[in-house]
Figure 1 (spheres, rainbow, N blue to C red):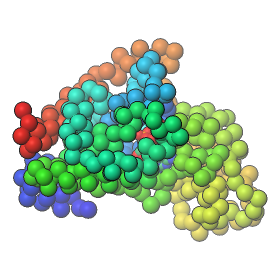
Figure 2: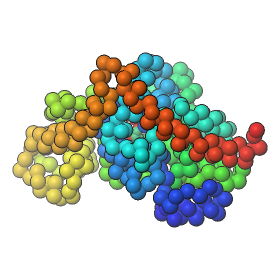
Figure 3: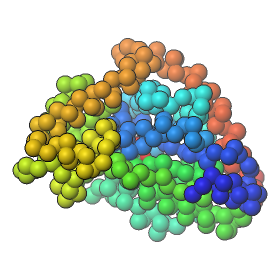
Figure 4: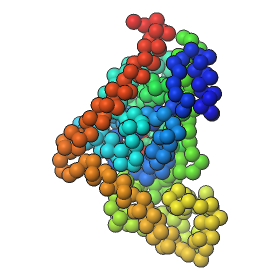
Length: 353
Ligand code: AQP
């Protein structure tokens, strides 16, 4: 999709014009320190493409309360600040992009309710993430977890996003957002930009190191390398990563553990599959894991330094909160008028208020 197409679409639909750069909306849950799956699959691109896109970044704290067992109020406060600091540390520049906390803008929750009224239960029943997060005990899962994708649709549609850069796990939710926007536009007239997912060919699904059949996830730290892991922790986690008993190092998707490690290697070092296979010809997993450790430690060192500079002493999270507050308040002040304009457009189209 080109930016020009979107601008033309806006004009036809009578929607507000924006700059010529396509707008992107990216959200991340403050459910712990991000891992290298979040980073390589999504966050790294967010930072690299701030010139190319009109970028809006949101720490989606309302999403982080949808699993009651994982919700501890004091921890959540620290995680929100920690995630904002992580975004700044990986290179999100609040001068170039808008960075804010979702719950600071009430329009997210209000639009979510409105969109819930145009979303079919059948659509929500098909969502894989609900099924996997609710697990066996579905009756006790929260209604918030069930309607999570509707809130996510509100996050995206509020900012007239053209593109949503995400990992592969979010593909179905973005498709649902498109369905909701299209249905709303059909029923009430052109109101929302219908966004497209932006999913990379490589790195869109980094797998858990201890189980390469499952995606790397914050809720399973044993299989993940966090952006704040020390060099020795990184070394240990790669050393323990599941591989197989074969000897050659080749990009074979069916050798899931090795394929995952080679994908991480390629994202860090660059190079074609063939060049990497040639580089490791005659070498074994020990060399691959040692090189991976070295590359990742070097990639994370400046991020960890910036994170420490921003949050100061982790034993005093209040200081970090005070230091980041002006940036986040300013971000919310820039996001709010955009969100309120879209909400007003939707309410008006529906005959509300
Ligand atoms: N393993 C992954 N590989 C590539 N991309 C990934 N993303 C998540 N896991 C991987 C992408 O990271 C962005 C932020 O994700 P999120 O924290 O908002 O939600 P999530 O997908 O639910 O991430 P986690 O790590 O699995 O968190 P928990 O355990 O809390 O649910 C998204 O773009 C996502 O696609």
